[in-house]
Image 1 (cartoon, rainbow, N blue to C red):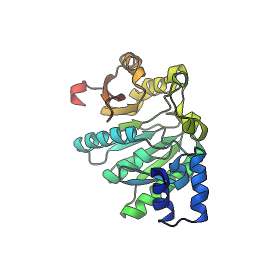
Image 2 (cartoon, rainbow, N blue to C red):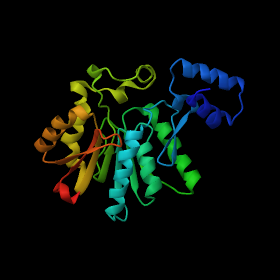
Image 3 (cartoon, rainbow, N blue to C red):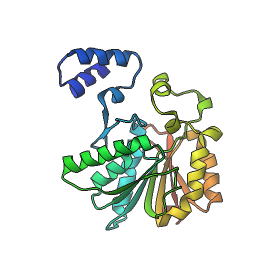
Image 4 (cartoon, rainbow, N blue to C red):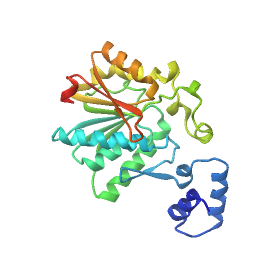
Length: 253
C-alpha cells in the first residue's frame, strides 16, 4: 500500500478496507487526485471541501497565505476588510477568517458552481470553531461586480503558461483548466488584476498575487505602469512565487 492509499484509508474509511476503498484505489490508479476522492483537503488548520472540484489548494499557496496573515495581524486593524479574489474553494478567505475572526471577508469567484462549495466551507468553519464568518460571496469576473475597497486583496488567479508543458497529467485531466491556465504566457488574468487594483485597494493596503517565476519581470513592469510598488517573494522551495503590491513605499508594506 502506497502513501496515498494509506492516507485514503485513514481519512475517508477510518482504517476499514471496504469495497468503496478498493474502488477508490482504482480511481487513484487512474490518476484522479486524492483530494477529490477524499472530498476535502487540509489548508492552514482548516478543512476545505472540494465538492464542485475547484482548484486543489497547494502548499505554495498555503505558504504565502500564512505570510499574509502575519501582515494582516500586524496592521492592527479592528475589522480588516479582505477580498479573496478568484476564490475557487474559498480556502484563502476561510484561512483568514479562522486566524482573524474580526475580519470581514468577500469571496469573488466567476464560476457559479463553486459558490455552494464556498458556502459549505464557511458553514463548516462556523460549526467547527463556534464562530460566524462575516462574509459575502460575489459571483464576478474579477472585479466586474465588486464595488468595495479592501485593506488586503489575496489572489491565486489562473496563471499557468500552457506552453511550458510542465503540468502533471492528472492535473490536466481532472482539475479545472479555467483555474489553471491563462493566455498571454499565463499573464492575461494577472494583467487585469494589476490594472484594476488601485480602484479596490485602500491606502496602505496590500495585494498578494501568486504567479509563475518566469512572470516576475513582466509583473514588475505592469506594477510600475499602474502606479503600484511590487516586491516579489520566494516560496518554501526558494522559487519566486508571489508578489505584494502597495500604493505606499515597499518598506512600509
